[in-house]
Image (cartoon, rainbow over all chains, first blue to last red):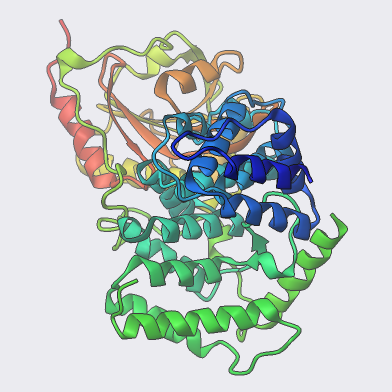
Length: 268
Length: 234
């Protein structure tokens, strides 16, 4: 109810005047929904945010970034994660000076990651990078995306690097050689989620290969050796889909679509 | 959380079950035994457009000595000394820790130092420059563990131009801050770290650094040779 009221208030702002900053109570309600393990509630909140008009999205983003500025090592990861999830729902946004409070969280030495368990710290930074990429901070997000693709050892980090590269588009074309890593025979792929920081469901699952295939399609023309690697990999995929392996079905579809797309030399 | 775990397990199993190949040993998870002397074929082009190459070369008059030169360190041989004493020659310095499980970071870094040590010998720079590996985890990396790590990666520590260091656990983060090293901890255990190589002249003054992507060993050794050829301070 609070969210509906929040949206109604923003939408009812007089023409020509920027919407009022959202109240703390409405932001609390929003972030609670975003942090819910219940995917339905979180997705509903995400849709409400995405449906706001640009001035309202901007007002919410500024309020969220101000909150982010106050977060640190003692802030529960779920709280930071929900806020990052909400920010990504607001993209695209015009350039905001306030986004610096997000940028300062990207360096590994940021106090935000101090004294957290390794998986939690790693996942938080992954979502910081993805949020920066979603908000169009290409020059800031690209080095981190490249680092994940070239130097990471976990499927989660690689997948995030690939998703980030895909979001950055042609400007991330230099990451292409690294996007082929998961198509090597020895690569152990796994199901991960990058849609929401908190719990996730079947429909949100992704993998390193899936994200790499999607990114390659978005980065634009590639050399013949890239196409050949994908073709060889595509031959190893099952021809028929099975209802019990949704992610594998999705991977097969995506890889074949990417091969087809690159063969035709289509630009994204 | 239960649904999350169930979904994770089910999808992971389905993903693995769909693979047409038999699982093979993961070369990435094994210590890098292959020679890493050569830069990966595609890495010259890869990363283009990102500031992944070396930073600009600082001329002698632009250089400043490290503030942390007086930091006590212990070598892999158990010798207690200071960073200043080991940066008395042109040096390439990088960070690592012995229990890093990422072959693309610390294993690659130590392998790269092995390669550079060989190149230094071939170029006749032995005794004129130094390769310094500093542990990120001084509480864990005792001299014996450092020596063991060197042996695992076939890094020859019999020569005095290759040294692995355990920095003072109370002060080592000052060095990270001064060099702007990307690293974070849970307690004293590393949770994440970047890769980087820092070049110093014979007065312990920072000259340039490499970040993000694996550096070109040939270029680093050439840089060390260039620094060794610089006139000694009066």
